[in-house]
Length: 245
Length: 245
DNA sequence: TTTACTAGTGTGGATGATACACTTTAAAAT
DNA sequence: ATTTTAAAGTGTATCATCCACACTAGTAAA
Image 1 (cartoon, rainbow over the protein chains, first blue to last red):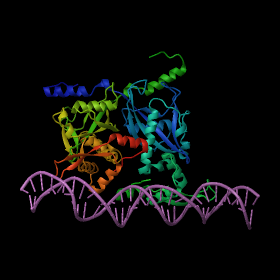
Image 2: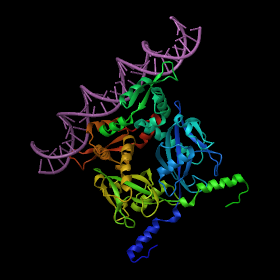
Image 3: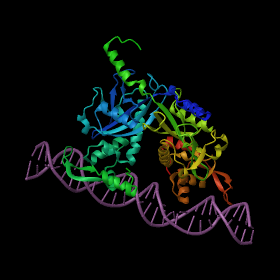
Image 4: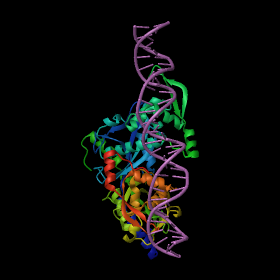
């Protein structure tokens, strides 16, 4: 610490000490709510903890922020380390700070949610044996305040899905209208009218209809579509376009 | 540390040490974006820092999380300590973690925004000489990443104001339709049509029109209204009502 | 009595949201 | 070859909401 050479500076240092108090340092965790979609249902990825506290119970994947990274990077690292996934849509959600949220030690946790297409990432290899996908309404009770985190994530996902084209993060690059509708029905947890849905999507004018069909579900086959990200971006920039379901 | 008596437990402890690493502890700050409304314009409250680093520059009010409180409590405490205000609407916004955001030391900051009615709280006494209200577009450059925090807060306030009756937090208990419209015009930063606005508000059916008039602005005088919080709550609970401007 | 100033009020047209049912297509079965 | 089957694909009419728009009412001050 440098030597104070006048009163004002001494005052500065006093204030600074007051504010920058080592005593009050805490551990910052990152917990990830990972949403997946398998062409039918919306799911979340959970793991069985293999360390104390709460060993053996289901939990979100998580880890601690390191001094050398910011929170976004920590979230990406945690997701990658535990699942092998990278280049995934993630968004910060909320910071949880109840004093006793982690009985082991005072820990504040920043939750992130991630969106992935289950099928396309099957072979990236989940690095943890005990990781499992759960249907949203069949998920087990989670440790700490992870249930609350999941509830917040679902609420956020719902709101976002209504106004931003994040749904495509959950689908394979090529998808059918039925799959897109299934996705929105899963996210919003309600049935939608097929014709109205398709009319709405078409009016947004950001999908490209391919000549290719998916013949796996029906005799007739269903045309495949891709999301035209460039067109979407241009519309947003030029006309303030809002993707609104 | 307790003595390990079998391999599994040793593994546990190793994992635990890995995860609970004192090295990675950080300071968690809380910074408050305080919005105020004075019947005419939306403003934010800023202070001139009287300590290093960045002494003399304009900044949000802030402080550090203590071990004995959660973040919401810290935000309330910081707001109260520095402005004397209490019982104020506050909401967590976002957690900022850029590595060099505070040059003094690795600090992560959770931003909160607060909404207050400037007039009603004039005599609560701002505890800091250097605190000042600024019009949104006349605010000076702020330290660290505080500008970004303010931008996020404005965006959030805009979204919230469209779907939740938080506007009333910024108004005195009794207000005129004109004041309410001024408020929304300030928040949304655009002119609204008087008749459409009043029709919309009336259709929501959550205001009580008083017999009293505010005679201070016009010869004719304008009726005063109060927000019927109970009625609003009941509508939300019973019909899933959404306050939508 | 006049002036000045803001409060207060209603309608029609455009746009978007919702409800709703039959035809098409191609594979599989006969 | 013909029939069956199962999902894909397609349009319209009604209703609700959004938006543009201009004059009268009321009171204090001159």
